[in-house]
Image (tube, rainbow, N blue to C red):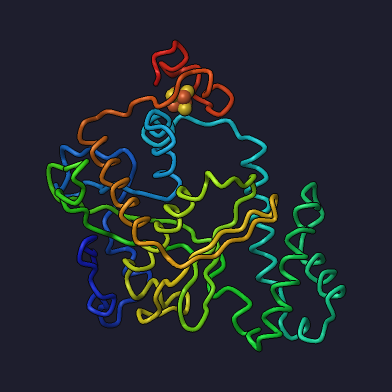
Length: 315
Ligand code: SF4
Protein backbone atom coordinates (compact mmCIF):
# COMPACT_ATOMS: atom_id res chain seq x y z
CA UNK A 1 0.00 0.00 0.00
CA UNK A 2 2.89 2.35 0.68
CA UNK A 3 4.95 3.66 -2.19
CA UNK A 4 8.64 4.32 -1.79
CA UNK A 5 9.29 7.82 -3.03
CA UNK A 6 12.57 6.87 -4.68
CA UNK A 7 11.68 3.58 -6.31
CA UNK A 8 7.97 3.94 -6.98
CA UNK A 9 6.09 0.67 -6.72
CA UNK A 10 3.97 -0.29 -9.70
CA UNK A 11 0.29 0.30 -8.93
CA UNK A 12 -0.50 -3.21 -10.08
CA UNK A 13 1.72 -4.75 -7.43
CA UNK A 14 -0.29 -2.95 -4.78
CA UNK A 15 -3.67 -4.16 -5.97
CA UNK A 16 -5.30 -6.38 -3.40
CA UNK A 17 -7.94 -8.84 -4.53
CA UNK A 18 -11.58 -7.97 -3.92
CA UNK A 19 -10.89 -4.82 -1.91
CA UNK A 20 -13.33 -1.98 -2.29
CA UNK A 21 -12.26 1.65 -2.43
CA UNK A 22 -13.70 2.19 1.07
CA UNK A 23 -11.79 -0.81 2.46
CA UNK A 24 -8.55 0.43 0.95
CA UNK A 25 -9.02 3.89 2.49
CA UNK A 26 -9.96 2.35 5.85
CA UNK A 27 -6.73 0.35 5.80
CA UNK A 28 -4.63 3.49 5.49
CA UNK A 29 -3.08 4.88 8.65
CA UNK A 30 -4.76 7.68 10.59
CA UNK A 31 -3.29 11.05 9.69
CA UNK A 32 -3.08 14.54 11.10
CA UNK A 33 -1.14 17.77 11.34
CA UNK A 34 -0.68 17.56 15.13
CA UNK A 35 1.95 14.98 14.46
CA UNK A 36 4.24 13.86 17.26
CA UNK A 37 7.44 12.82 15.58
CA UNK A 38 8.79 11.39 18.89
CA UNK A 39 6.11 8.68 18.98
CA UNK A 40 6.25 7.96 15.26
CA UNK A 41 5.68 4.28 14.49
CA UNK A 42 4.02 3.44 17.81
CA UNK A 43 0.69 1.64 17.67
CA UNK A 44 -2.26 3.92 17.03
CA UNK A 45 -0.10 7.00 16.38
CA UNK A 46 -1.20 9.00 13.33
CA UNK A 47 1.16 9.77 10.48
CA UNK A 48 1.70 13.23 9.02
CA UNK A 49 -1.01 14.43 6.66
CA UNK A 50 0.23 16.54 3.76
CA UNK A 51 -2.07 18.36 1.38
CA UNK A 52 -1.05 20.69 -1.40
CA UNK A 53 -2.44 23.60 0.62
CA UNK A 54 -0.65 22.64 3.83
CA UNK A 55 2.67 22.19 2.03
CA UNK A 56 2.31 25.49 0.16
CA UNK A 57 1.37 27.19 3.43
CA UNK A 58 4.59 25.86 4.98
CA UNK A 59 6.55 27.11 1.98
CA UNK A 60 4.96 30.54 2.29
CA UNK A 61 5.83 30.80 5.98
CA UNK A 62 6.58 27.95 8.45
CA UNK A 63 5.20 30.02 11.33
CA UNK A 64 1.92 30.55 9.51
CA UNK A 65 1.73 26.78 8.94
CA UNK A 66 2.25 26.21 12.67
CA UNK A 67 -0.49 28.70 13.59
CA UNK A 68 -3.06 27.39 11.14
CA UNK A 69 -2.36 23.64 10.87
CA UNK A 70 -0.77 22.64 14.19
CA UNK A 71 -2.40 25.13 16.55
CA UNK A 72 -5.56 25.23 14.42
CA UNK A 73 -6.08 28.95 14.95
CA UNK A 74 -8.89 30.34 12.78
CA UNK A 75 -7.99 32.50 9.80
CA UNK A 76 -9.91 35.49 8.51
CA UNK A 77 -12.04 34.65 5.48
CA UNK A 78 -10.82 36.93 2.72
CA UNK A 79 -12.64 37.97 -0.44
CA UNK A 80 -10.05 36.01 -2.44
CA UNK A 81 -10.90 32.82 -0.52
CA UNK A 82 -14.63 33.39 -0.96
CA UNK A 83 -14.24 33.99 -4.69
CA UNK A 84 -12.05 30.90 -5.00
CA UNK A 85 -14.67 28.66 -3.39
CA UNK A 86 -17.62 30.04 -5.37
CA UNK A 87 -15.88 29.98 -8.76
CA UNK A 88 -14.46 26.49 -8.16
CA UNK A 89 -17.96 25.21 -7.36
CA UNK A 90 -19.37 26.92 -10.45
CA UNK A 91 -16.74 25.39 -12.72
CA UNK A 92 -17.27 21.93 -11.22
CA UNK A 93 -21.00 22.28 -11.92
CA UNK A 94 -20.27 23.52 -15.45
CA UNK A 95 -18.54 20.25 -16.32
CA UNK A 96 -21.25 18.20 -14.60
CA UNK A 97 -23.91 19.89 -16.73
CA UNK A 98 -22.16 20.30 -20.09
CA UNK A 99 -24.00 18.21 -22.71
CA UNK A 100 -21.68 17.17 -25.56
CA UNK A 101 -24.56 16.07 -27.81
CA UNK A 102 -26.32 19.38 -27.41
CA UNK A 103 -23.13 21.33 -28.14
CA UNK A 104 -22.16 19.24 -31.20
CA UNK A 105 -24.26 21.25 -33.64
CA UNK A 106 -23.88 24.74 -32.15
CA UNK A 107 -22.13 27.63 -33.89
CA UNK A 108 -19.59 29.74 -31.98
CA UNK A 109 -21.95 32.44 -30.64
CA UNK A 110 -24.57 29.90 -29.64
CA UNK A 111 -21.90 27.84 -27.91
CA UNK A 112 -20.71 30.83 -25.87
CA UNK A 113 -24.32 31.51 -24.80
CA UNK A 114 -24.75 27.86 -23.91
CA UNK A 115 -21.54 27.81 -21.82
CA UNK A 116 -22.59 31.06 -20.08
CA UNK A 117 -25.97 29.55 -19.24
CA UNK A 118 -24.26 26.80 -17.25
CA UNK A 119 -22.81 29.29 -14.75
CA UNK A 120 -24.75 30.77 -11.82
CA UNK A 121 -25.85 34.39 -11.62
CA UNK A 122 -23.71 36.09 -8.98
CA UNK A 123 -21.07 38.80 -8.58
CA UNK A 124 -18.46 36.86 -10.59
CA UNK A 125 -20.30 37.17 -13.92
CA UNK A 126 -17.29 38.74 -15.64
CA UNK A 127 -15.07 35.80 -14.74
CA UNK A 128 -17.76 33.33 -15.83
CA UNK A 129 -18.00 35.11 -19.20
CA UNK A 130 -14.24 34.73 -19.70
CA UNK A 131 -14.43 31.02 -18.81
CA UNK A 132 -17.50 30.52 -21.04
CA UNK A 133 -15.70 32.04 -24.07
CA UNK A 134 -12.61 29.97 -23.31
CA UNK A 135 -14.61 26.75 -23.00
CA UNK A 136 -16.57 27.46 -26.18
CA UNK A 137 -13.30 27.91 -28.06
CA UNK A 138 -11.83 24.76 -26.51
CA UNK A 139 -14.91 22.78 -27.54
CA UNK A 140 -14.75 24.12 -31.10
CA UNK A 141 -11.10 23.07 -31.34
CA UNK A 142 -11.89 19.61 -29.93
CA UNK A 143 -14.73 19.27 -32.45
CA UNK A 144 -12.47 20.39 -35.31
CA UNK A 145 -9.96 17.68 -34.36
CA UNK A 146 -12.67 15.03 -33.93
CA UNK A 147 -11.85 14.80 -30.20
CA UNK A 148 -15.01 15.88 -28.42
CA UNK A 149 -14.71 12.65 -26.43
CA UNK A 150 -11.67 14.24 -24.73
CA UNK A 151 -13.37 17.57 -24.07
CA UNK A 152 -14.82 16.76 -20.65
CA UNK A 153 -12.49 15.95 -17.75
CA UNK A 154 -12.42 12.33 -16.64
CA UNK A 155 -12.03 13.62 -13.08
CA UNK A 156 -13.96 16.67 -11.90
CA UNK A 157 -12.92 17.62 -8.34
CA UNK A 158 -11.67 14.16 -7.34
CA UNK A 159 -10.32 13.26 -3.90
CA UNK A 160 -7.08 11.27 -3.94
CA UNK A 161 -5.19 9.54 -1.13
CA UNK A 162 -1.72 8.02 -1.15
CA UNK A 163 0.79 6.81 1.42
CA UNK A 164 4.44 7.30 0.53
CA UNK A 165 7.74 6.72 2.31
CA UNK A 166 10.23 9.54 2.56
CA UNK A 167 13.65 7.89 2.99
CA UNK A 168 15.77 9.55 5.65
CA UNK A 169 18.59 10.35 3.25
CA UNK A 170 16.41 11.46 0.33
CA UNK A 171 17.33 15.12 0.72
CA UNK A 172 20.98 16.10 1.22
CA UNK A 173 19.87 19.49 2.50
CA UNK A 174 17.24 18.13 4.89
CA UNK A 175 18.48 14.74 6.16
CA UNK A 176 15.99 13.05 8.49
CA UNK A 177 16.45 10.84 11.54
CA UNK A 178 14.56 7.94 9.99
CA UNK A 179 12.39 6.88 7.07
CA UNK A 180 8.87 8.23 7.42
CA UNK A 181 5.56 7.16 5.97
CA UNK A 182 3.36 10.18 5.26
CA UNK A 183 -0.07 10.44 3.71
CA UNK A 184 -0.80 12.73 0.80
CA UNK A 185 -4.37 13.82 0.34
CA UNK A 186 -5.99 16.31 -1.95
CA UNK A 187 -8.71 17.23 -4.40
CA UNK A 188 -7.52 17.54 -7.98
CA UNK A 189 -9.59 20.19 -9.77
CA UNK A 190 -9.71 18.43 -13.10
CA UNK A 191 -7.92 15.62 -14.94
CA UNK A 192 -8.18 15.43 -18.71
CA UNK A 193 -7.14 12.54 -20.93
CA UNK A 194 -5.23 13.06 -24.13
CA UNK A 195 -3.96 10.14 -26.19
CA UNK A 196 -4.48 7.87 -23.17
CA UNK A 197 -2.34 9.99 -20.86
CA UNK A 198 -3.41 12.09 -17.88
CA UNK A 199 -3.25 15.88 -17.65
CA UNK A 200 -4.11 17.27 -14.20
CA UNK A 201 -5.37 20.85 -14.30
CA UNK A 202 -5.57 23.57 -11.69
CA UNK A 203 -7.94 26.55 -11.64
CA UNK A 204 -6.74 29.72 -9.90
CA UNK A 205 -8.97 32.75 -9.45
CA UNK A 206 -6.18 35.22 -8.59
CA UNK A 207 -3.99 37.24 -10.91
CA UNK A 208 -1.23 35.68 -12.95
CA UNK A 209 2.41 36.66 -12.96
CA UNK A 210 5.38 34.81 -14.45
CA UNK A 211 6.96 34.66 -10.99
CA UNK A 212 4.34 32.03 -10.12
CA UNK A 213 5.63 29.45 -12.60
CA UNK A 214 7.94 27.47 -10.29
CA UNK A 215 5.32 27.44 -7.51
CA UNK A 216 2.67 26.19 -9.93
CA UNK A 217 5.00 23.46 -11.17
CA UNK A 218 5.55 22.29 -7.62
CA UNK A 219 1.80 22.23 -7.00
CA UNK A 220 1.24 20.19 -10.15
CA UNK A 221 4.07 17.82 -9.18
CA UNK A 222 2.11 17.21 -5.96
CA UNK A 223 -0.85 16.03 -8.06
CA UNK A 224 1.45 13.88 -10.16
CA UNK A 225 2.93 12.27 -7.04
CA UNK A 226 -0.55 11.51 -5.66
CA UNK A 227 -1.66 9.98 -8.96
CA UNK A 228 1.48 7.87 -9.27
CA UNK A 229 1.40 6.71 -5.64
CA UNK A 230 -2.26 6.06 -4.87
CA UNK A 231 -3.70 2.54 -4.75
CA UNK A 232 -5.24 1.14 -7.93
CA UNK A 233 -8.62 1.15 -6.22
CA UNK A 234 -8.46 4.94 -5.90
CA UNK A 235 -7.66 5.28 -9.61
CA UNK A 236 -10.46 2.89 -10.54
CA UNK A 237 -12.98 4.91 -8.58
CA UNK A 238 -12.47 7.66 -11.17
CA UNK A 239 -12.30 5.42 -14.23
CA UNK A 240 -8.49 5.60 -14.37
CA UNK A 241 -6.03 2.73 -14.50
CA UNK A 242 -2.39 2.13 -13.68
CA UNK A 243 -1.30 2.15 -17.34
CA UNK A 244 -2.23 5.82 -17.69
CA UNK A 245 0.70 8.14 -17.12
CA UNK A 246 0.80 11.79 -16.22
CA UNK A 247 2.36 13.25 -19.38
CA UNK A 248 1.52 16.96 -18.97
CA UNK A 249 0.07 19.36 -16.45
CA UNK A 250 -1.55 22.76 -16.73
CA UNK A 251 -3.24 25.68 -15.06
CA UNK A 252 -5.88 28.25 -15.89
CA UNK A 253 -6.09 31.81 -14.50
CA UNK A 254 -9.30 33.25 -15.98
CA UNK A 255 -8.78 36.66 -14.32
CA UNK A 256 -5.73 37.08 -16.57
CA UNK A 257 -7.07 34.86 -19.40
CA UNK A 258 -3.93 32.80 -18.84
CA UNK A 259 -4.03 29.13 -19.82
CA UNK A 260 -0.91 27.00 -19.89
CA UNK A 261 -0.05 23.34 -20.51
CA UNK A 262 3.40 21.79 -20.54
CA UNK A 263 5.04 18.35 -20.34
CA UNK A 264 5.84 17.29 -16.75
CA UNK A 265 9.17 18.52 -15.45
CA UNK A 266 11.35 16.13 -13.43
CA UNK A 267 13.14 18.83 -11.46
CA UNK A 268 9.79 20.05 -10.12
CA UNK A 269 9.20 16.60 -8.63
CA UNK A 270 12.63 16.66 -6.98
CA UNK A 271 11.91 20.12 -5.64
CA UNK A 272 8.55 18.91 -4.27
CA UNK A 273 10.14 15.95 -2.49
CA UNK A 274 12.77 18.23 -0.95
CA UNK A 275 9.95 20.45 0.32
CA UNK A 276 8.29 17.44 1.96
CA UNK A 277 11.60 16.46 3.62
CA UNK A 278 12.01 20.05 4.81
CA UNK A 279 8.53 20.02 6.36
CA UNK A 280 9.24 16.75 8.20
CA UNK A 281 12.54 18.17 9.44
CA UNK A 282 10.67 21.14 10.94
CA UNK A 283 8.58 18.63 12.93
CA UNK A 284 11.73 16.79 14.01
CA UNK A 285 13.33 20.03 15.21
CA UNK A 286 10.03 21.53 16.43
CA UNK A 287 11.07 24.67 14.69
CA UNK A 288 8.67 26.69 12.52
CA UNK A 289 10.42 29.98 11.89
CA UNK A 290 8.56 33.15 10.84
CA UNK A 291 9.64 33.88 7.29
CA UNK A 292 8.84 37.51 6.66
CA UNK A 293 9.43 40.89 8.12
CA UNK A 294 6.29 42.42 9.63
CA UNK A 295 5.41 45.12 7.06
CA UNK A 296 5.22 42.57 4.26
CA UNK A 297 3.05 40.24 6.37
CA UNK A 298 0.38 42.44 7.86
CA UNK A 299 -2.01 42.60 4.95
CA UNK A 300 -1.70 38.94 4.01
CA UNK A 301 -1.61 37.12 7.33
CA UNK A 302 -4.39 36.61 9.89
CA UNK A 303 -1.75 35.85 12.53
CA UNK A 304 0.14 39.10 12.26
CA UNK A 305 -0.87 40.20 15.76
CA UNK A 306 0.29 36.93 17.31
CA UNK A 307 3.56 36.63 15.47
CA UNK A 308 7.05 37.80 16.42
CA UNK A 309 7.21 39.39 12.98
CA UNK A 310 4.98 42.11 14.40
CA UNK A 311 7.93 43.21 16.49
CA UNK A 312 10.35 43.02 13.61
CA UNK A 313 11.88 39.71 14.71
CA UNK A 314 10.80 37.89 11.56
CA UNK A 315 13.13 37.69 8.63
S1 SF4 B 1 2.88 37.51 10.24
FE1 SF4 B 1 4.37 36.98 8.63
S2 SF4 B 1 6.02 35.83 9.68
FE2 SF4 B 1 4.21 35.87 11.03
S3 SF4 B 1 3.10 34.00 10.59
FE3 SF4 B 1 2.22 35.57 9.30
S4 SF4 B 1 3.35 35.43 7.35
FE4 SF4 B 1 4.54 34.35 8.91
